[in-house]
Image (cartoon, rainbow, N blue to C red; front, top):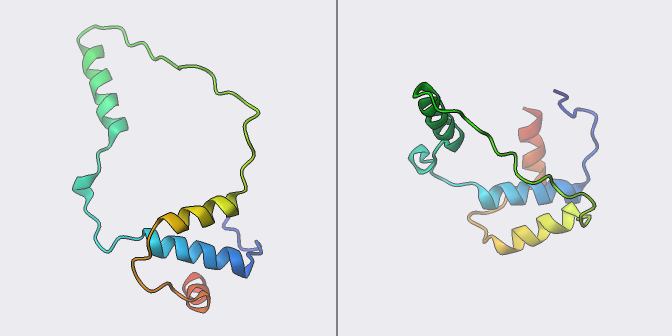
Length: 101
């Protein structure tokens, strides 16, 4: 997987990214709050299969193409406005030092 070492990131993009991470980062990670829904569904299907039942997977309707084009930077800015800051945002200089380490 490419690491993006030659990618140029503007100061605005860097500040937006660091701010988003700061706002969404939780001080405490509690794995009990999360379930592996894929694993649960897979185990249920395997259980049904072991009982001799046929497993039928519904692919659902095909996704529609030609949707609205979204400006990702504007969407991120709006997202950050909805999430209150939890702690003092990191400076971009500090963020650059962290990414180089």
